[in-house]
View 1 (cartoon, rainbow, N blue to C red):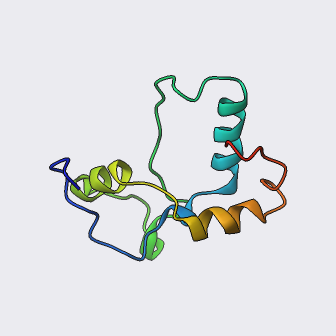
View 2: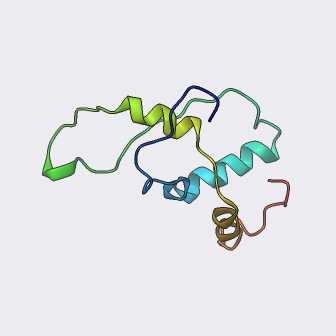
View 3: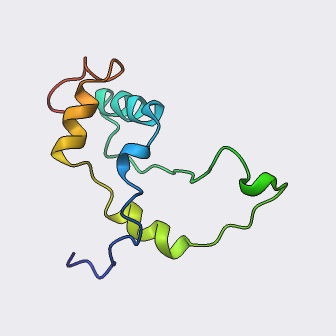
Length: 93
């Protein structure tokens, strides 16, 4: 949207697929004033698909737009505020 980076191709993959652990860690960084520090992330999955013993990663051209446009909707935020792990967070977070 104005950035030259196209939107992600798969509308079924949303920010709500993020582990709650990652969101509570983000809260910890925010709480300690580190939310503007540069960070590194990993993209992974828990099991090799199709009972395989290795995986070849393709599709980085889809990951970059997803990360670039990653944001929660108002509905997502309302849901997250209702979860036990995040209901104590300050409104500013």
